[in-house]
Image 1 (cartoon, rainbow, N blue to C red):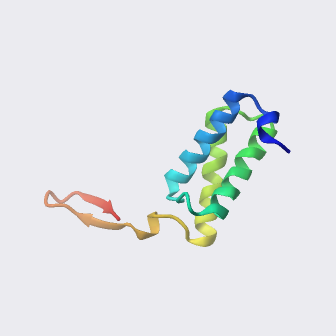
Image 2: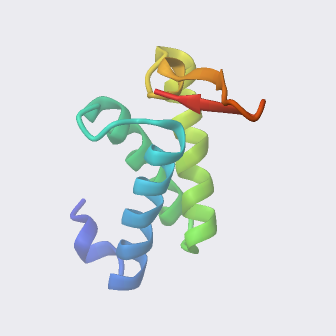
Image 3: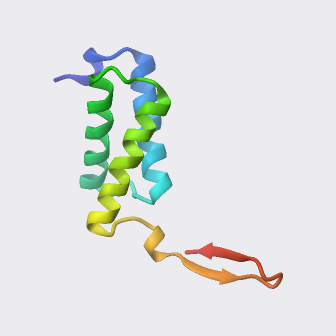
Length: 94
């Protein structure tokens, strides 16, 4: 299937934004091609079902990203360390 011929420009743009949001929210890096491919496939499935809003596509992407991170331990979040700043507030770094 050629994706660009199956969807209008607005849907394609929403799919791209959803992929980036899903990957960023869970720390899936651009070079993690298999993870991104899985997330993109779930976003595509969502669009093919007719759910083409940015919210629906982003939700589908985030669920897929959580599956990837949970199954493979991928992402930046596992590398983050919780620290306490001088004011006593906790923050993550990494």
